[in-house]
Image 1 (cartoon, rainbow, N blue to C red):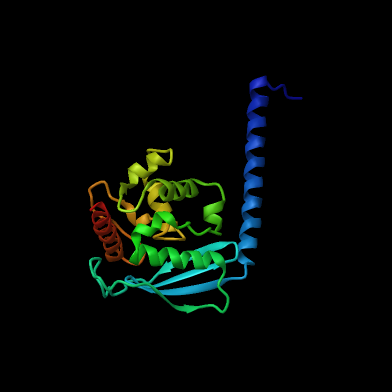
Image 2 (cartoon, rainbow, N blue to C red):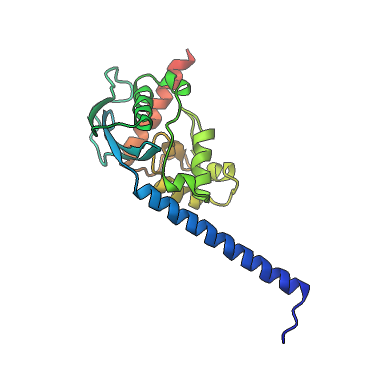
Length: 219
C-alpha cells in the first residue's frame, strides 16, 4: 500500500481536475462544431473595390468571410467611384448577413457610419470557444479602431501575453471574418505591412483607405 503525502494528493487532484476540465472543454467544442456544421447556411457575394467578398452564415450569425485571392484592384483608395454592391445571394438572407452587408457598404463608401452600425453577430467555433486565438481576435476588434495599427507584439500584450507575438500571427491567419475583425491593422514592428489573406496588396489598400478616410474626417 502506498503512502502519499498531502502534497502528492494535491498534485494528483490538480492533475485530475485539469484533465476533467480539458475533457469538458473538448466535448463542448465538439458539440458546438457539430451544431455549426448543421446550420442552415446562407450566402451573399459582394462586388467591392477588393474584388468579390463572399459572406456565409446562418440565422445565428456570420460564419466566414472570404476575400478574393490575388484580385486585380480596379480603384485606388482615393477613387470617388468606390462602391460595394450585392451581386449574388441565396434565396433567403438572414438578418446577420444583412447587417454584414450594411457594415461593408459603410466601410467602403461611408466610413463615418461605421461607429453607428452594429457589428454583425458571429457564429463560428473559433470565436466562441475559449482559446488564446479567440482572446486575440476579440481584443483586436474591441481595441484597434478604424485608421489605427498595432504590431503583433503590441497586440499580444493587449491580449495578456506579451511573449506571444508568434501566436498572434497564427491567430491572424485563422481569422474567419477578415476586415470586420481587422487583422489588416496588425503590422510588423519594423513598420512593414506583412502578409495578408488574399495578398499583401489588399492589406496595403485597406490601410491606405482607412488612413485617407480618417484624415478626411479630421477636417
